[in-house]
Image 1 (cartoon, chains in turn orange, red):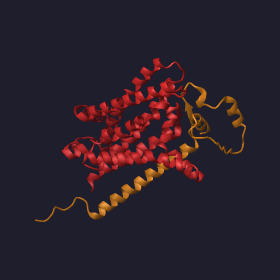
Image 2: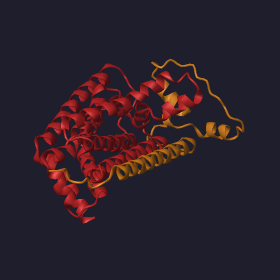
Image 3: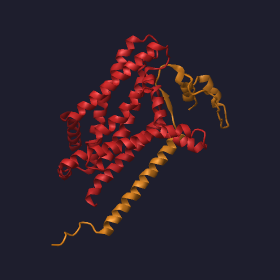
Image 4: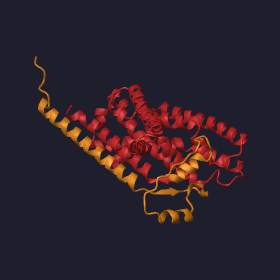
Length: 91
Length: 250
């Protein structure tokens, strides 16, 4: 007794596999683009009521007047309790 | 839409009709109790001006809950149906593959949210115990829960994908846990890459889940991790859909 004929030929299976692979790569590329855009244009919304998570309006005004890119170099021990707050403000 | 909600109810119900749902909730409650003891010890030992959520975030129990819950919740979703033979019955009903995938994901996510509700209890208990303003802040707690929810979305989608690829629940859980821990470990890679080229440091900082959660626990909602979590959730669900669809032509 012979085996039943498969529903899909080998060529058809390869064609569908290729289609799935291409669409997956396309979706992944789209995802990368979205993440790239998100990393360049973002908002940080502080929901906490304490002011440790926000830069003061005066600092914001000074930073708003800076026209060139600024590279901040911070020398700080990571074990310091203030490290996370400082790092958070620089983000 | 009616079919979708029926499937969600069925999926959610399956967690409560079996022992796994109760075991997961009991384990989370145990870890929460241990973390609460840890928190109280820390607050009694030294004066702190950090929010409660920041301290909770730094305990081992917090990460154990987040990392272990998803594989256990999602391991059943597809693998159990395939093993018991109900998957084919389900797929012959007049529901689309997309509806099935979304319903499985939603059911797991709703169960995850229910599992996280007891987390609020320590906030309610700690609030009267602390007289320092800002320690138990509603904004910080809201941001932390947004982070926990987004983490849940990502890891539930990952768990659904792992479950869809096999008919063995244990293998599904192990695969999900392995990929989940790998994603988590990228944060440590981000720390070691901080002194490398700028683009590489930025790339690894963007995928650093620990840093994302640190921000949420401090009460900051950043759009970058939100986009990261949502896009990866979408990607894993897309892959799950393709795996489910593959039974037609494989």
